[in-house]
Length: 444
Image (cartoon, rainbow, N blue to C red; front, side, top):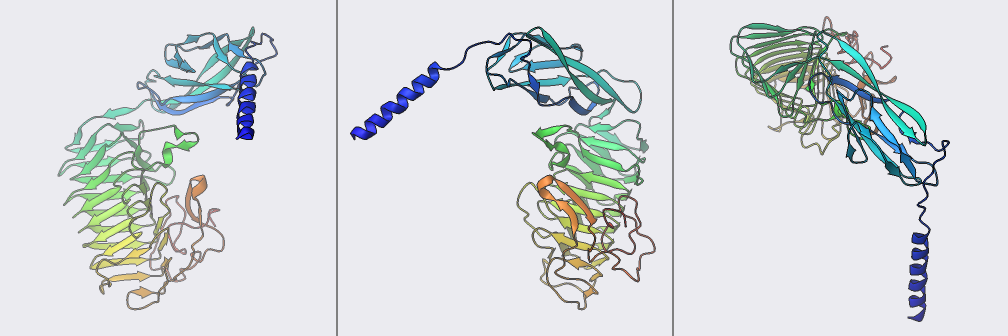
């Protein structure tokens, strides 16, 4: 007991001595300057007329005395806003940084409209004065004008172009009998919970160099170095209603909650990418669906569900390496009387193929496909490869979801007698002789 008491008294004395040694000296030496966590603060692509996401960087004091930021200001105070260690303003003074400590600086902006298509790189500076020495940190942004749609319904024949991105704040509806055409390079950016509903016809005329892109409207980073560009659940998704039609080429639909859902629709997908949905990237019921040269990947509830209708899938990659939660269903749920899958890969985390009825009807066939699971060729499976890794160029830890193939993949040059006259990957490469939607990462 006596030894324990002595130990406690010794620890208390040491703690008090350490507190008494806290350094309250303030350096005034011009040689003592702050360090910044970045050499340029990049806001990325931002939209004019609306506040940008908040960007931040760290200011370090690497010295043994307190460092005082004599003044911190941003040059374009009309359009930029500044916050230093919780103090907001455009001309901030007297911020202390304790020895070997740091403070955060936050920046946001509302940039003026450009009045023309395209993107312009803007540049301003944050100016620091410390111990009589001035320094500056550049702040850059790629600004572009945007068209904002709120409660928009297309009732006739209308075309969206690539001149400006379209920001859908709540809903975009293609009415029965109406046609919406998306030219090559068109970008539709959906706000939180926004949705697209097609009761008429949707045509997307993307090209390998200028794909049609449908995604969320958030830019920048969720936290640290995790970009919004990989986050699912940013918007609701696209719904095709009974009697609607879709003809999509080189189109990317990504980062939604429900992906693409269709009921009783006629849908053609050519060289498209449907990926990263909190539910499924593609879920069709009673549809006529043709998908050729498509990547359908990453979903919390699986990747592709086919129920009823007639579906033809050729040279597609159906893969699931979903990042944001457990995968609750097989990658491909086959619950249709007529489903023909050829020259395709079904692979990834979790189960690859699910059969709700327990068996496959005679109208369901897989020809020259690669599966994760074991199996045998029979009346439904023809010249398929089972229990084989296709060797995707995927690295989940680095947020790389690249479904092109590594050298040595069993999918390469595996189609010696292709039934498809022409198949093209989403990046515009001929893939008729390969299984799946891609060749190698080096385009071999």
